[in-house]
Amino acid sequence: MSMFAELFALASNATLTLIVSADAGSGQMTVSVIPKPKDDSGEAALRQPLCLTATPQEFDAGFLDALRDYREVRTSLADQAAATKEVLEAAQSASLKKASEATSKAGRPTTAAAKPVSRVAEGEASAALPSGAGGTVAAASEPQSQDLFG
Image 1 (cartoon, rainbow, N blue to C red):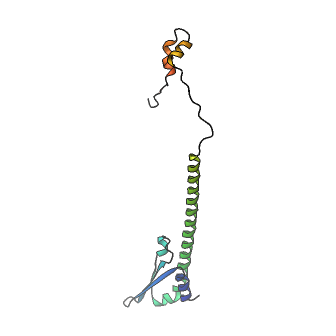
Image 2: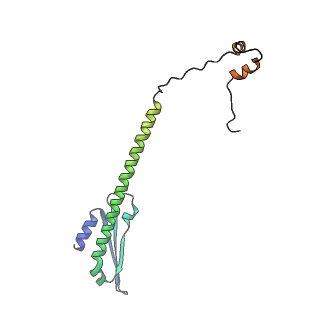
Image 3: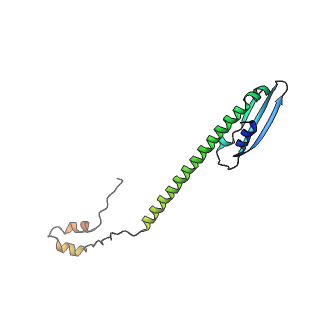
C-alpha cells in the first residue's frame, strides 16, 4: 500500500491535518498527522495525533509502516468505542424498561383487600372480661407502641 492509500484509509473516518516542519541544523523533520473524527464519539484517544521526528531517509524507510500501525490502532480504538457505546445504550434501555415495569406494577391495586380492624369499646370489653381484669382492658384495647430505637 502506498502512503496516499494509507492516508486515504485514515481520512475515511477523520479529517486529517498534516503539519510538516524541518530543522536544517539537525537535518531532521517533524511530521504530524492530526485527526479530527467525523463522528465525534467523545473518545479522546481518537483525536490523538501521530507526531514523528526523523531524517528524510528514515521517513522514506519507515513512515508508511508507522502510518499503517497508527491507522490500525486508531481503527481498533474506534471499534472499541463503538462497541462500548452499544453496550451502554443497551444497558440504559434495559434499565429504563425495568424502571417502567416497576412503576406500572406499583400503580396497580393490590389483589388482597385489607380487612378492617374492629375495636371493642372499653365499656364492652370490661363487661366481657372476668371481674378483676378491668384494669387491663384499656391497655389491651389501645394500640401498643414500641420504642424501636430505644
